[in-house]
Image 1 (cartoon, rainbow, N blue to C red):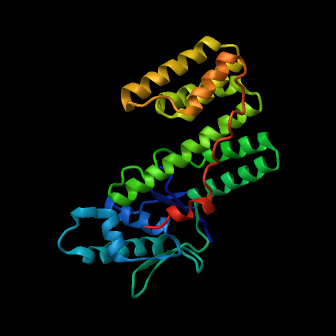
Image 2: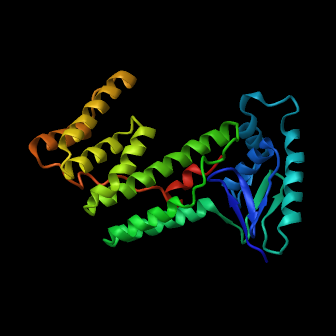
Length: 274
């Protein structure tokens, strides 16, 4: 049987072998996204309605849902032939996407992150960094790109946070391995994208300092402190001040404090429900 994969770390779609499977219009995709992130669990029509339409659901209410389910079911049945292929089941209380043998890019990301965590625990920092780089290959752009509604928007932010934590942790591993030169370009690019993310600022300060660019490291601190005051109206945190003080003392170097590891499936389970 041709393998089926559902991809959500970019535009939501399915791949059947090498073929792209269109899951329909945007709202139909949004319905499917809720089923996908609750795969093998029953989701009520009321949850789907709230997740897709929020407070702007039409007067017809949950009567909207069955036509979307019907079209999605037909799409899967036509493209995913096989006794263990994905299917949408109906029950008295709702709908369930049964994945069967189908895979997902989110599961691939989770698996690589979990393997990286195990490698780091075993002391293999280089292996952990390589596995986090592998995890990043699962991404094809903005997750659930173009989908609207409370569920898709919340899920998108959750996934984006997981991605940046993965990127941060891989770069931290490079610093801990002494590979600061390699980390600097990526840190500069990420800090441009996330200008108020403290962990990135501290890592960039550290990498610059460790490569003899102390003046630039000081500039990173000054610019970040200014952004905190201007954009958020807050003072530097103790962690940022500690890194700055270490620079002044001449002993700033990794690891300062090992950062949180990206969530794997066990850590993220609570966040996968509607």
